Image 1 (cartoon, rainbow, N blue to C red):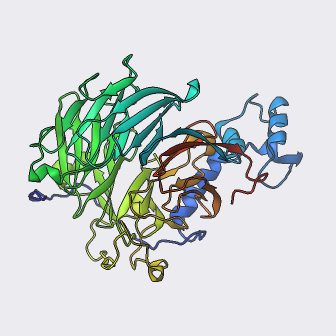
Image 2: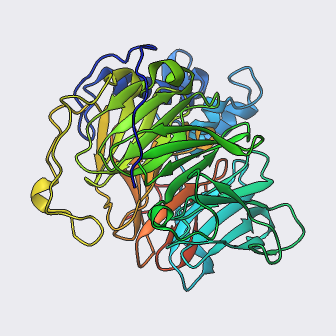
Image 3: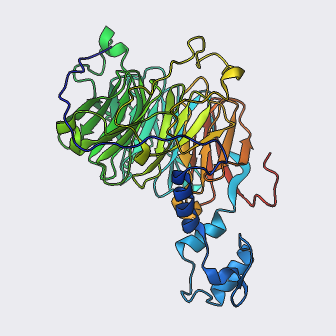
Length: 466
């Protein structure tokens, strides 16, 4: 399904620069060096903790025992750990132990996400179920939601910032919003509770199976940080921003030339969006400029196949993307081009990621105009839109990135060096999604084997993670 793309194009700021991407472990780009410095500052302990004697420091990292002793002796003069001190200790302990099985369903699990405060865990399954677990209450089911008007699977879920509402999407133009604070545990759509439908197509209705909306699907949906809007990525090559108070589409952005698989806010301000598509491109959108500029603020090229997911660093500068070319890429939006002209590369037409292995002769292929800062390899992106993320800021200083994989593993990479620091092996089928607890050394995963698993703490120096 296509719609007219005619709209005005005026200037509202210019993207600048392009540059070459770097491979895993190569620190040959100023963008990587900069984020390396920023990451180090987030997890570097106070200088007095590392001193063997006055004026002399030992190598990094500093042992937790010495850090704790230094805190008790008030070496830093603060009588407590700073956020960087805390990250220095906690980032050494990765959630790769176990796992324990939280739930086992006879349905492929597509979504798994901790809430912002870590008290809730949301899991979405192909056969209409969305379960919300109370993490602090022994992972008991707080809410069991039976989705309405499901097509194919639950593609995404998002909790509102106040954790009162959940929005879910499927391969349908209607996303639904549920009050999860109600007393009822079993929430069957429009039977035990109302699941309000939000029409993102502008013409479809909840029970309409017309030819137009039958091919319209929502791949990604997110609440804004103020909870007033949701943003969605769709199969009609567009991004939608829905105003919840006004109960209407605020803006529709004809964004790409293929399915838009992922969209997210760049930071808490909510003005800037990142999107990724099967047209191989990441795009940056400044909503303040859309009425005058009428196009993307910038384009990031480097992937050779479609993009399955994007996660923002939260600083308005960096993001990572997972691609069907079997890579994760780190981007600095200050390197983006004003458009994609001359940067397109023909995809390998004889390959379809839904049922074929990625050709071995393409694994080391590079985009001639790769603008990424760094590239990470080793996982597999096949059959579904597998997701990747930055590790939490509070406990790790965003020192790592992690991803699910079609080989049933979860991979954790060092953000700066690109080294693989852990491979979590338990699941029997594809791990589409996984989520690191925002504060504790805990990681939840969801797999097509129907298992929701919880990985916990272990010191990587004390355990072989292979």
